[in-house]
Image (cartoon, rainbow, N blue to C red; front, top):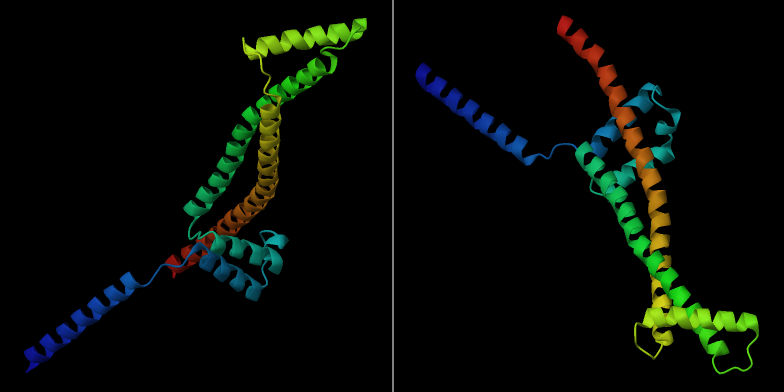
Length: 212
């Protein structure tokens, strides 16, 4: 009878251990936002504000937690990854703008010289200044056209307008992103400060617990 009770007890313990293991596997670990929310809530109750007063401002805390939730950031690695991707997008826009700026400058010169050429072409007599401008425009366009005769002024203007619109779109995105990066950097710094302060405070507690 005693052996039977022991077997039943072992079976119950085994069943309980199996259930606990399944529960641990099914339970998702707390996210970075959950962890920070817990720390800030506890600090608010304890009335602590050692890190930075602005961190515990409700508006700042809400902005920080919303940013983490909105971007699906569950740990520090993903926070760093998100920040790097934003910086990467900024650099990507800068790289895209450089050739656009160069081409716009070239097209502007083409269009300006074509307008001078057509303005003085066939006009007689030309003043000395007009002749100089006409000759310079003629020589410039001859070099650009490389043997071709019909000047594609309309195509140049169409391309200039398209590139100008693209440049404006990229510049707008860059300015928005610049603000977002600045905000993300502040959030990232706040997160690191909170966790660093929490770690410093936890160390004496662990030492006290070990000494008991």
